[in-house]
Length: 156
Image 1 (cartoon, rainbow, N blue to C red):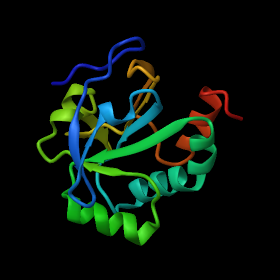
Image 2: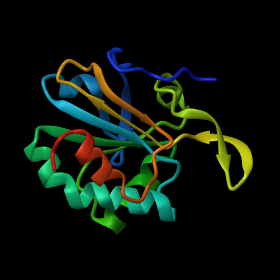
Image 3: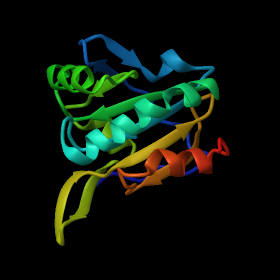
C-alpha cells in the first residue's frame, strides 16, 4: 500500500512517457509551479469531465504560473486518442507500472459504489517551484474539482 504525501514533502521525481511516447520528467519544470493530477482511466465519463475542466481553465492556471500534468495507467496510444478527442492542452503521462501512482499515494484501496476495490485514487498535488508539495488532495471529485482547486489556490 502506498503512503500519502503531506504538505512540505519533496515531490517524488519521475520520468514518464507522454501521449506521443516522449519522456517527460518532473525536473523539466523546476522553477515552475506544477499541478500533477492522477485519474483512473482515459475516455471514461468522470475522467473526461475532470480533464475537460482542466482544459477549460488552462489559460488562467498557466497565467498564474501553473503547469498541469495528468497521469494515468493508460498506454500512450490511449492517452493520444483521449487528448485528440477532447482537445486537451496539457501533457498526459503514462504510468502503466503504477510506480509514480504508488510514490504519490494515488494507488490503493478505495470505495467504488459500495465495494472496496484497489485502483487509482483520484488525487491532485500542487507543487511549488522547487518541487515541494504545497497542497496534497486525495479522493477528489471529478466534477467541480478545478473550481475548488482554484479557490484553494486563491485564484478566484
